[in-house]
Image (spheres, helix red, strand yellow):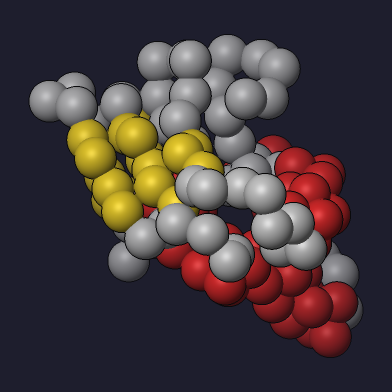
Length: 118
């Protein structure tokens, strides 16, 4: 859970998750991992306030930024233990991609899952 009213995937959050997942992938004492939130929503997607400055970067940097985000989901898929997402509220964009990267998903009746950018 990130500080603030909602969980969103900022560049800082993605970097920190990447480091944490790299460490977790080396451990052999974890039986399983469940991703959930104690907020009203799971993950609402990318931090849209970062879009404008990010989209003004040179194309090579922009492609690298997109790849680093998708690498996080690949890392979740490759964790050496079962993973699950427990979804309540919104799971949009990157939040939807996050839950799709886990092995299992369970959703409350309040869950709303989608890819608004499609």
